[in-house]
Length: 86
View 1 (tube, rainbow, N blue to C red):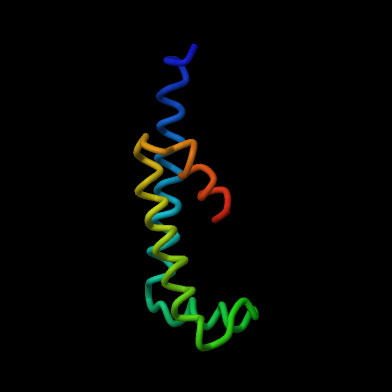
View 2 (cartoon, rainbow, N blue to C red; view 1 turned 180 degrees about the vertical axis):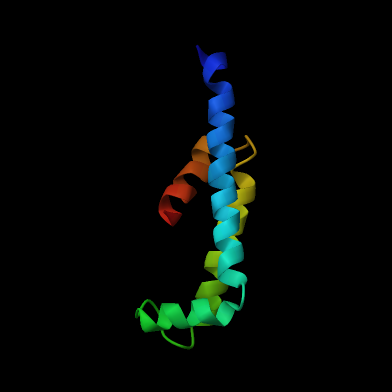
């Protein structure tokens, strides 16, 4: 039973990984300053902390996109971190 679902699981993991990487890329281009401004306008943070928070969110999204494709610490670390980002 486990082997029959394995290709589907890897396809879903790949799709989620690509979505996280694309999301990080989309926040970087054309400029990260637009994402910083969005954080300030939505009152998530102030203007002083916005650059740090914006870059941390982008870095975590990119990291999770890459980490989602590997098996180490998947259930202990990667899945909970992904749920927190969503």
